[in-house]
Length: 392
Ligand SMILES: Nc1ncnc2c1ncn2[C@@H]1O[C@H](COP(=O)(O)OP(=O)(O)OP(=O)(O)O)[C@@H](O)[C@H]1O
Ligand SMILES: [Mg+2]
Image (tube, rainbow, N blue to C red):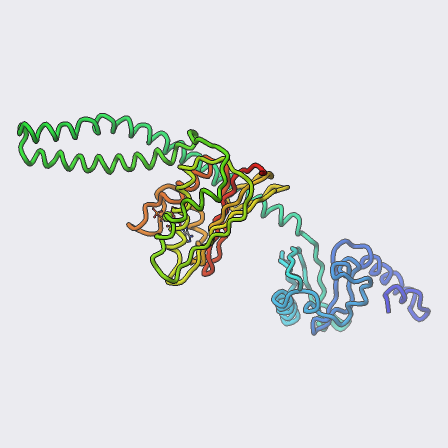
């Protein structure tokens, strides 16, 4: 029986008609979701708005049903525990909660649940009032992501400037040293004008200079994205030509490397720079896999009709070739994800230089592209590089 039917019944005393009418009004017209449950958490009654959320035409269809009929098992169990706690303690619970529905979709509500009393003051169930806050919650989450992305972009940009400046100054200081120290050693050796220990010292200086030149080269490579020579190229040909160089990176029989090259669009690429990407990504994947594992390099065309929100940046709509490198390795922890594109960041101790991903970032930026990373601990990682493309 609907509550509406009650008001018309002759046995209902006049003084009860008004409160029943008010209750009916509330249940029919409140945009908030209101429900009453018995002590076994079965629905007794609910508002129209609540019934609509459950896809019901009439609130009475929910009578006798429980959250287990509508939500995921985990969510229904949590609600059941909350309601038991309310009935045991007489407390009211107010919270923001994520609801996971039986089909896996997620919504957010701000909810208050209280005990339901009979006229003797005995708890006979619960009632709840909740309001959908999915939109503000999603907006909040999106804002936090955008904030994080802005911070990451600013960090990468200021490091780029810093590296460019150090690289320039270091080069200037090194140029005369690199020219004159070897000459001084040669001359000192041939004329024997210096003691052997001083010549030995100069040789040490020369070795240190070589290392400094190496570092300077790395800094220059990282900061020279403005001088790329971009021309339309087929990314699949570039990958196939560097494939023989990638295979030896796998020394174990149980590691496999697969290509799934499906893109058809051309990208604007500087082949000498582009070819430095895959050895870095593939060797990282290899390092992340124990004895067994698979790395897949794939390419696909993508026509993005809306902005894609990646982990580090927003990928503008447009046509792309997406180059992905996936592995079945360890996955990457959040704190590493935050720092791994920074120069010199490594978790490999003396075995890593920490330049690999920094260079990949710089090269992708030199191609006006974007990077996104999806990772799951214990399952693996996919690096996706988005290169602006022209349809063939
Ligand atoms: N596919 C991956 N799986 C797990 N961790 C990864 C992966 N790729 C990168 N990393 C993490 O990111 C860090 C930085 O990588 P990057 O390539 O810049 O430096 P590196 O590999 O440590 O040193 P180098 O490249 O000089 O050998 C790595 O030390 C590792 O912790
Ligand atoms: Mg590396």
